[in-house]
Each structure stands twice: as C-alpha cells, then as structure tokens.
Image (cartoon, rainbow, N blue to C red; front, side, top):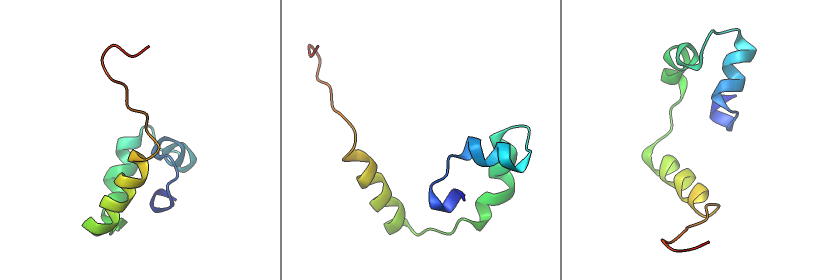
Length: 57
C-alpha cells in the first residue's frame, strides 16, 4: 500500500499499529525505489503546489 501512495497514517491504522513510526520501522526496508523514481515523484508533487510570494494576498 505504501509503495502505491497510500497515506502512511491510514496504512498504520489498518495494520493496527499504535503509530506510523512502527509501520515505517517494519516496512521501509521493503520499499526499494531508486533515486530516479524518487526524483520523478518529487517533481510531480511540485507541479501541484502553489507558490506564494511575499506581499501576495
């Protein structure tokens, strides 16, 4: 679920973990993405963000 973009808090609750840190400690070693994949995801997120400049309302 995590590798498919499901929110870590939701995954943690579904697995019955007390907090997301437990989920991350157990499952992060299964997430094998290379740097190119991570960079692509970051760029995709960046295109969805709004930039505000000082003085904008």
